[in-house]
Length: 317
Image: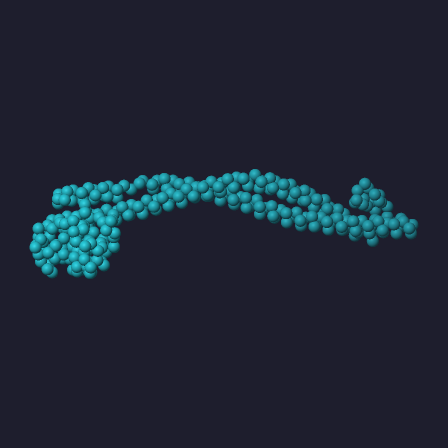
């Protein structure tokens, strides 16, 4: 493989990753619209639910009022009956003694006594009976009003219930859509971040490979790290410095300075290590080739990946 082909391939890879990294879908507007729609539907459902709660509260209150009125009505009827019984007893006593103190129509066609004339001793009983009769009349009217009110509230509640359920269903569906869009946005953002990270890594690796290939022909000098001569770890250290990555000047230490990768998954820029224990390192440049500072007799040169016993690889950065 020639240096020119390697550089062209690296540039094409980098160009493709850069294009992908800049493809940001325009999802903000649909998300905002869905969120606004969900908020509106949620507010509408809440209003209907609140109205339904008010109806339910009114039903409970009206039922309590009706129960109180019915208790009061029962008490007023009891008082009226008891007082009427006392008046009848008094009239019968007067009739038995031949008294002319009372003159009345005992039965007027209703449960209430129609008193025309009473003696002083019976005035309070008659007044009590009449008050009870008036109380019964008022309470019966109130009972009817409350029963009508309860029927209206029941009808209102029954009509509102399906509307509340439908509105809540629409609000829930809108909220689910918002959550779905949010998750999709998050997924796309994560994907773009990965793409950007890959593009940045490709940019760094491209600089590393370009630098390394540009040094082909430089001499090998033990302990040297450039700019005009290198040993193997000094060469990889100087190359990765082009991507802003600092590596130790030792091949064994460099093997612990990156993410281990399978030798079947190498990409240009990865460091490849040879011999056991590790005593040599090179840079993978693609197409089964490496560039390395070999030895004093060959200097910096390219070579097949498996020309030496390959024991591992890492990806710095």
